[in-house]
Amino acid sequence: MLLSHFPAVSPPGFTIRPPANHHQLKLRANLKTQFNKKQTKKNKPTTKNKSSNLGFNNVKKEPVWQCVKSCGACCKLDKGPSFPSPDEIFDDPSDIELFRSMIGPDGWCVHFEMSSRTCKIYADRPYFCRVEPDIFEQLYGIEKKKFNKEACSSCVDTIKAIYGSQSKELDNFNHTIRGKSVE
Ligand code: SF4
Ligand code: SF4
Image (cartoon, rainbow, N blue to C red; front, side, top):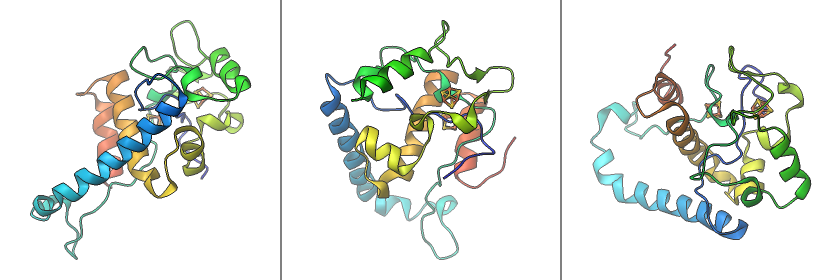
């Protein structure tokens, strides 16, 4: 998946809260996924009656993850203590070093163009900046079939943390993944 029209995409430290070590990080990611699954089952009877979520065939429409323009929330690489540190995310020391080298004094990635909210090195951005099923599996232990749901909730958490729960960025994302156009 190449998101050439959405230039600021970066998953590190996305949504999974900081555990004690990397294995717990992956476990936490898996537990979160399981929790989502249980919640989906538990909510099934009630969601059937929510007509705003239903298509013509009475099937609940799943939000479809996509990156949105004018966001870049995940390009703030140092998001504070409630997000995992590079050491908790990566096994490879060179990844840790690269990630750290990208953090600017204000916590934003040094390659992030703040005025346009775009990535200055988009075509050459590191692998861990790519929101893709393979990367989520490698970094967070999230099964590919669960990528969509995890990517959606990761963006929501990240956008809330950076721009706030009432932000236009969050509105924009929520509307976009539900197939509504906003600007
Ligand atoms: S937080 Fe999500 S929507 Fe925002 S730039 Fe990152 S991947 Fe895109
Ligand atoms: S290199 Fe920096 S600006 Fe570009 S996608 Fe990655 S974190 Fe964002």
